[in-house]
Structure formats: C-alpha cells, structure tokens
Image 1 (cartoon, rainbow, N blue to C red):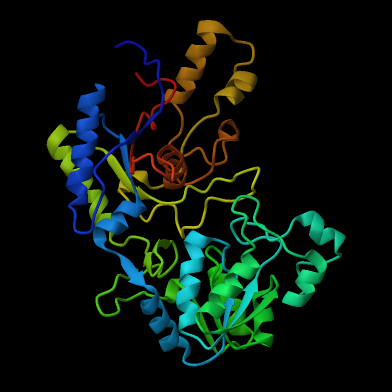
Image 2: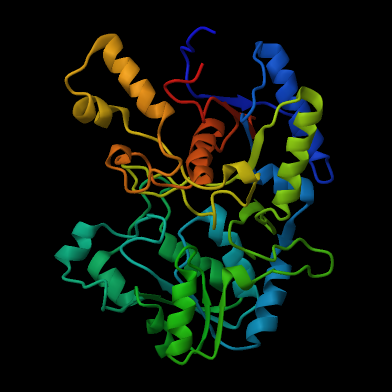
Length: 398
C-alpha cells in the first residue's frame, strides 16, 4: 500500500434543519453517507462523527420558558432577596436567564466579577484597574464607586454596557436591582444570605465557600430547571448551564441523554458501512480569542456525550523532539526510518516520557470538540455535523 500523503481532515456536513421530534440519529447517518457519496470519500474505522449540542437539544424539544425559570427560582428562594453572583456577560447565554430569575424575585443583588467575567468578557481593562489602585482580590465596589472610577464602558465587540443592560433587565421584570463588584463569592453575604451562583467552571468552589461562610440558601444555575415543570424541558445534570436564548421568552437548554444518541449513530454506521466509528456531541470548544480575550467556554463541558473510544488523552511522541535530540545526527531516509520505528514501538502510556513533552495534554473530546466548533462555526454555515477522518493516524499510518 502506498504511503498516505494527507493527515487529519475535518469536514462540515450539511443536513436538513432539525425540528423537535426528528429522528436525529437517522438524519446524521444519512447526511454523512450522502456527503461521502457526493464528495467521493469513503468511511474508515475510527472516523469521528460529531454533532453540535444545539441540534440535539432542538430535536429533544429541550426548552424552558422565562416563566418556568421564574417559578423554579421562586420555589427555591421564596420571597427573599436573591444574590445573583458571577454571571457571564452575554445577551445570548445569560440575559434571558436573568429575566427569568428577576421575574421570580423581589430584589436582585447582582454581583459581577471584575475586570472580566469567567470566560474573558471584560467590563474594564487591567490597565484601568491598575491605574485606579483597585485590588480585585479584596475590594468590593458599589455601582456608584464603579462609575466614579471607571465611568461607562461598553464591550469591545458588542457595544453593550453590560452593567446598565443587566440592571435594566432586572428592573424591567419588576424587581429591585442593586449592583456590586467583587471577586470573592462571600462578599455577597453582606447583602443577602440567599445566593444563586452563576459561575460555570468554579461553581463547586463558590458553593462550598458560601455555605461555610453562613449562607442560608445556596443554589447554582446547574440547580435551576433540573426537572420538568408542567411538561417543560429540563437538564438533570446541568440545569440552566449551557443554555442559549431561543426567543425573547424561551431558552434552549443543554441536551440530555447524549450517550444514547451517539451509540445509536455508531450502530447505524456499523450496519450501513461495516465501519466502527466514534461519535460525540460537542458544544463550546474551549479556545481563546487573543484580541477580545474571550474563552469559547460557556458550556459546562465540551462534550456531554461520546462513544467509549473517545475516552482519555492523546498518546503521541513529539516529532521535532525526536529529530532534534534522539536522532539529531540523522537525516533523509535514515531519519525517517528511525522516527517511524520509534512511533511503531512507542509505549501505550507515554506519561512522563520526555519525547512526549509539548504534545497537548487535554482530553480527546476537548481537543476534537475545539476542531469541530471551529469547523462548524456558530452562524449560517448550515453544518451542525462534522466528520473528522485521520485524527488517530500518525506518521507511519498507510
């Protein structure tokens, strides 16, 4: 067999617009096979089929209304003032949830982290903070103090003053709004003992610190809408985390039961092609924009479900390390042969091996999810399915 000249290939696969109740496993299978026929490529063992979480949730009808959120918040907090802390600054991700939270409360103490939120959306710059002599680890700022020090600030890309935007949203739902700025979750306890912590990846720590400091009621976004209300959607694992705005009164939740879906797609492909493929559902890819400093990491996990073959991390040797160290005196065919031999004979676990340093130490689903998120985009490409071929190949694959 001749030597392969192409490595990993990532293809966006077009499919019909997905609606609630659609047989997504069948649609994904058919769309991939139709693309293969149209473009003249063949399926291989260990190809990866990835499906964006958005169409999974849509096919499940996993939606909740603002009124559903309001009822759940009211049930958990009663008529108490609610401290809403560490939300991300996003019209799509959080603003719609905030409307529901405010609709279910009489007063909201909104505590924003600074200079940025958890995923890198900045209220102010580090330079502004330094020039003002503010210590982000200890200083708690009122809205008045914030305005005196920093004035009005709009987001670089959206042009939105999120402080004013969130305050207006709360008041628009008939709730009183008080805005403070702090980075220690316990600072909110000077205002209320009832806290809804909205951070994504640090939520367990925030809950722990709040409870240890005497908070009376502590919930996270992952505790809101964990069960259906009058037939609504829900997510038992993540609640409102990973949700997106659907309409002005409705939120699409992160999908559930993803393991069943990916295994069904893999079984379909095995039946139709005889190939053993891997399948995953993906959301945000966990990469950072150097200019805007925003992390694409608003979902609680990159992949809420995958086949078992995508567990673990890459087990790879660094070619340039081998070339510059172990085989620095070789060149041409001799170098190629020596590196090929090293790859063929590599250990099944390279943890601690210097020849693997510099390879990316991340979960396979996180790495592949980033590739998929960049391939499919978030706009009008119309490719919510991504087919990746050759991901598990290496230098010696034929």
